[in-house]
Image (cartoon, rainbow, N blue to C red; front, side, top):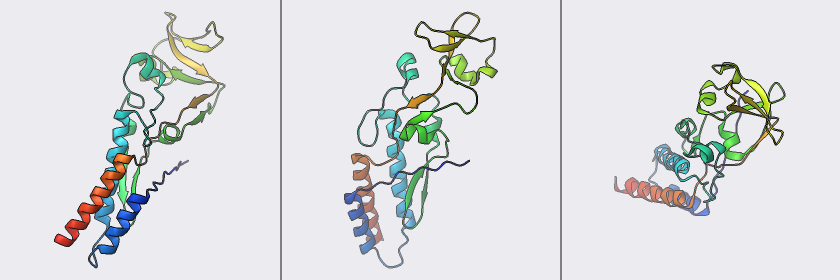
Length: 200
């Protein structure tokens, strides 16, 4: 089942600059290349948020458990989500998006519940992450319970490989949208496009 989510950027400054460009374009000038450039600016900004670890509003992302325990950055373990960002443009739209099914839950946050069975199994070691599912883990696993009453899957050495949870609440870590710096870059692109349109 396809999942669709969208983020709309509303910036009076960018909209005013875009109207200025469209009003002053020579007749028959195509706007699709302009929209493609604006989409590239938005994609660059979105990709930069994976490095800065903050949303377009400047709010820092809550660090993931993996980043806290093992180091590294949140949403950047494999880089797959960042690399999945793509652009599209028409004569009047500039779009940045992704076909990664995990994007919406990371961007907007929300609650994840198991599709089948009573628990989600969350890998906590590199070996468990590589295996993905406990069914593919290379070795026997058994259910154990922590002193706090949490269920876990441990290997034959007693090392916790998976946390078992009935649900997980993911914090929002927005990466799509336009920051103040993105809006400045969008306005600069619009100004350059207008100058080139009249000089060429």
